[in-house]
Length: 316
Image 1: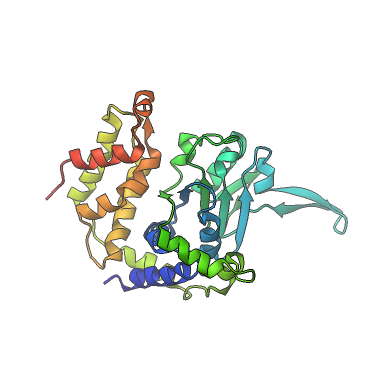
Image 2: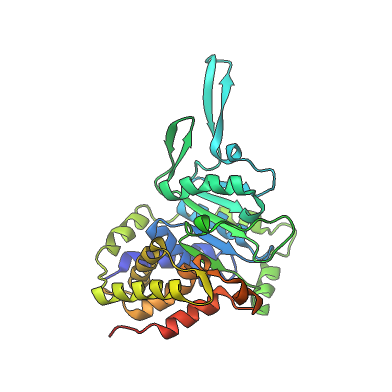
């Protein structure tokens, strides 16, 4: 039934896996974000290929790609753009910033100041930016893929809860296996063999495949009981003793959409509780705010998600 979505998954796996070793593990999350028009937060220590993953994804989608490096002195005008005086026309013209691209990589977003982080909120939610009383639309398939360091590195700022809620998914990238690292050394260890140029060989996806996958998703049915299960998970998170902030309504909607796409990826015509459980961690974890006591005890957001899934009754 879901041939278009399954074909999209196969194409993404082939495109990303040909450049990024071990990319197969993150393809489902990236596909969910693409089909649902969501944004992705990629978390991991530096040097694990997060930037290469974003560049290869943009290449596969065949869209414009721009990169924003998060720094302490990055200003909102640096990413939105500015009006400059043009000598030829004797007037001010708008020079768009890197936000006006199909795929925008915000590298180390938690090194940018709060003011610049806040400038991303309107772009991510409304797909537009406001400048001098005018609303400028962004590309229809606008996608933000932001990377952040998971630890309190020097010079980082915590992302506000309102911005974290704008990211549909969080992908946690850990250290690869020894076999995967050996393949990286074998493939990119030479002087002329560079991962920075390898992604240029990636062929764009078939035209119209993403649009067909989105249209096909409307045929996946979600029973009323499954909708109630998602709401029960959201309400349980809001009452959990180790959380000071639970899942928002936007988060529940993201979980609903992600479960439909997960069902479509396995060729099903309806969503099951297992589909909800499969996407619960990447959709919910980054939206949950732990209490100070939980942080002192070493509890993680993933631990709380696992507890919520274990304690919330599953509909038959």
